[in-house]
Amino acid sequence: MRSRVRKTIMKERRSGPVLRTPCTCLTVAGYPLPLALAAAFTTLSAPLYTQVEARHHIGHILQRTFLLSVITSAIVMIFWWNIGPILIALKQPRDLVVGMKAYLRAASLLLPALGLVESMKAYLQVQGEPEPAAHY
Image (cartoon, rainbow, N blue to C red; front, side, top):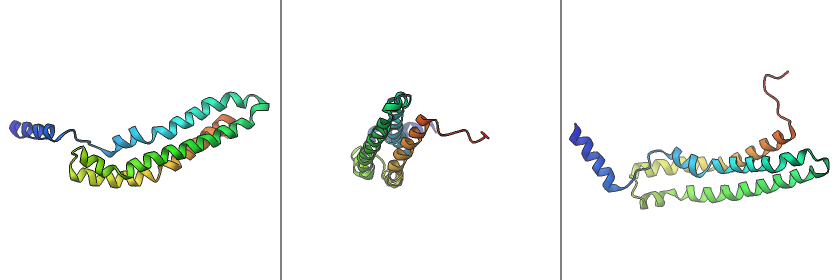
């Protein structure tokens, strides 16, 4: 039993590192970007909401956040859509490449929408609009 495990470990070491799950790529290279842009929007626009004469700048910051979100989503989508040849060049197993390519292509369709939703949610939070669901 130990010799089989040792042979498997040695085989993996020779073939290079194996990327185990597509979620790793998803949570490292994709979803934090829209969340970070929404957090930056909140940081920039929350102080402006208290100043009546500067509230119109919140809309300008929101438009820029939308634009940055779409641009960064497009860059990540191009990377995710062409992940197959990159993983093959990194000597990943063929079955993992096929599964990861399908998973990331499906997930890439969600990325632009996530950026827009998170930005709009931050916009409403800056204005104090959302209330808890149990609030009457």
